[in-house]
Length: 309
Image (cartoon, rainbow, N blue to C red; front, side, top):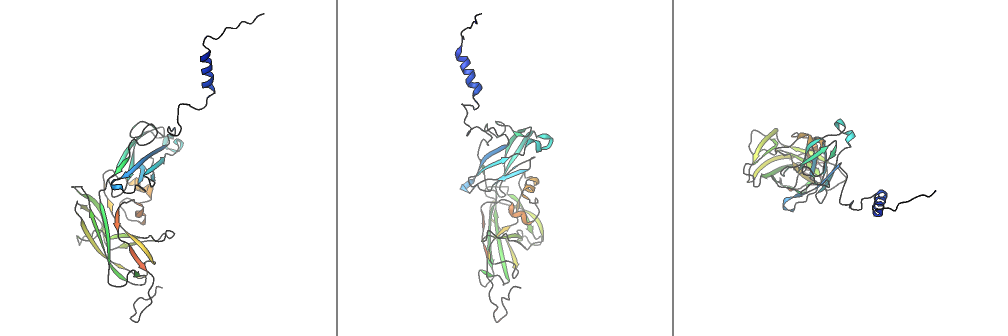
């Protein structure tokens, strides 16, 4: 019995089918350019006037997750797995916040479906990146200077000294001004910025933080486009600070539309309340004079410079 065979009419179609069926990679894709990771949002941030874009805070609402930009201003924020999200995966359009305290808050729209980022929707492109670089613009200029009473400088650790701390604030190019919350005193219009965090900066291994308080309570003030100067006298106690160099960070909450208290909870900071974690709130371009504490001086015949206990 003969077996009859018929020649293939379109042999090239069979060959093409075999090539496709045995190919595991898409030969027309570039894996370095096209991402299938729908759990990650990436983007880039710049700050006007060529200010370093490092350590800008980026936070996604509803998910309550945040990260900081690197030295180039780039960031990558990864969503939790859909299984760990409420309802097995959130869906909706959510705001991505880009924040530095004394710069205008910026936001972007991120579409999410079943716990994954939807590409090519909102402000996200087809690769999971922000479509445009976000540029932040300054809304409050901050300058702090220190005048210490007559005597030896750097201040000996075992010396008591009266310090005058001057804070100058202005809202550049904002005619309506910016509302600022600080610690002040209601019986003097000049005492407005009356609380500072002192952080030692010359020894990265030592996490030493103290507070300087010379005010009675929180109060708000609108800062205009010309400099306003606020002075406060602070009595530096003997032996209060170890020998070293300190930054004085003024306690200032800069109010803006759209700020969410939950954004600060992720940082471990209580919104518009004082605690030592306030220093985690990101600022840029604060011109702050350093406070220098020197070593102990030997006690002299007048009894000055008694030793620390």
